[in-house]
Image 1: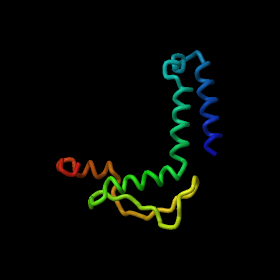
Image 2: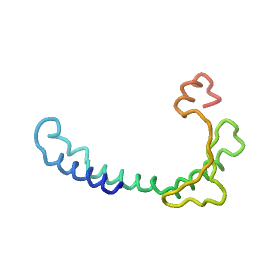
Image 3: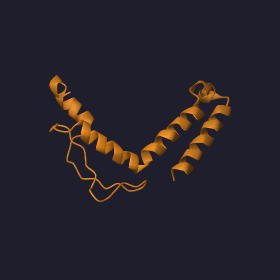
Length: 109
């Protein structure tokens, strides 16, 4: 459960802020509790698969007609829910591999 994991991170951050020795002595400038709260908001958005489904629809619109860049499509008849997303499978290459393998051809990047 993500909330339990976030609670552990929150507790750890508070604990680290109160330790006053060794390498953790000067961690207050990092604002670990603030960072964890920002991360929590972003994680919860990403864990809602309806948002992921909306993003897939938008990516497919943005790259319509481009044969080099493809994204999975939502499976018709299966509307995304918070916990379930039905999408097609796409064979592909991870983006960082594509960039490394094609860095000489700027037209592809």
